[in-house]
Length: 304
Image: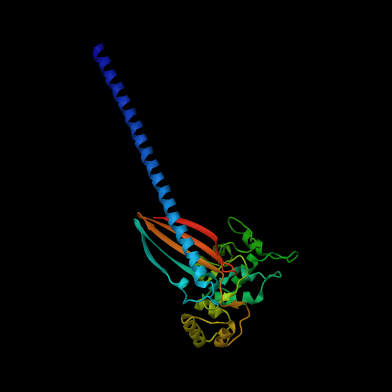
């Protein structure tokens, strides 16, 4: 009986050892596979990033070559053509450039001399009205980007202090137009409707009338003629205007905010599909008066 008992204990100990060894081996295999997948993801991200930055550098040089001697920036030039899907090993890459000066620059609401620029405010109010948004939101956005004047008694921050969680209006230029989501009086649905037509740029900019979309064109003046706007859109498709005077002549009214026929800021949207994953690059490119183009901001994304 003692011998049988000892044999049973030995078998039990052996089973426990096997179970422990199996668990350790399983964990080692799990850790190895996890490390392998992590390494593959890192290598894939680095590969995507190299493709993206290479394309970004190429497109930057194209802007310099395409617009180097051109007096205007318009929609018939090569930069405005969408980059067709280009095959790369195990995937493809596509992209496009957008002229950011065709949109309304939210930071223009702050006058360079201080306070709110009333002409820019009026244009923004009309743009909001096109999407059924209360024009009073324009003042809220202006307060957001404008430094409070001492002794003004502005109650702007009192509104945000009542939110959960509370926060303060920065009283400084927007770093991104996505800050609109924090402005009082603007719903998520309204934000999504407005977002494609506004931008936040680091310096005051004129609206390029050769690339401005119809909603922005409509907001430039009160009671814009539909037929005049249709003629302007047609002209944009034919190469645009050589001067703002020609634009205002076709519009039939003078514009009270800065407009132009040239641009310095562009957004590059680049998408890469590689081995089942999707990688995106969003860059803002700045074209200096000398014609040299450089990357101003850059952000990467990675999604399945």
